[in-house]
Image 1 (cartoon, one colour):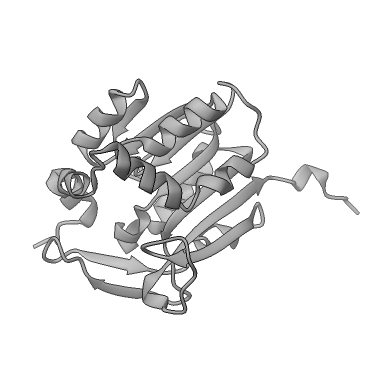
Image 2 (cartoon, rainbow, N blue to C red):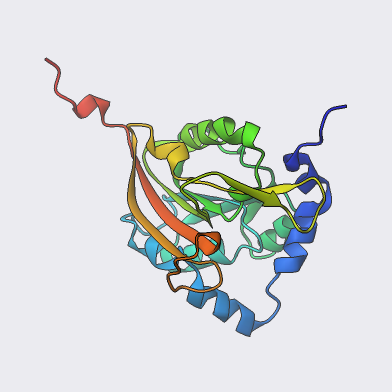
Length: 225
């Protein structure tokens, strides 16, 4: 019997359950999230122009708070995907394009995205999908573009039983290494924080990393001899 993939588990309902558990329902909760949002300041520093010519796609967009902020502050053309239909409906209610989808099959044209964001989702992806996830990111990103990741981080692979669903696991590993082995990708910022706040911790079980990578296909700039 084939094992049900974690991708399918989240599409079949656990994505909606995750969304309901993490939904911020009050203005106070939203403000608290904004104050400790690990990617907030890093995204503001990315040297992209203001305006709708900049295309942003967030994988694991949740209720769309990060996308809404970037649209309002930068004027960027934003869109999101999530395995939760409830999350997608919430994002669409903000006037933002959203689709039910997962990281291994992005609903975006090749070389169409200036900034791709992974919002706390890769730690739950099937290990067998990681090559495909990285390939999809490379496909949709423009030759000169940016990649942002916020997720659990560990220098070594760790796994544990996912507490909300049997036979599902969460994984911690060096997620930026999925990309920066490639000569076109370089980490420009990488910050470790405590899972529950913005302070640093020496406890590796609580590490969350906010990482910015630059994609620059520079082959044409190399000297030929």
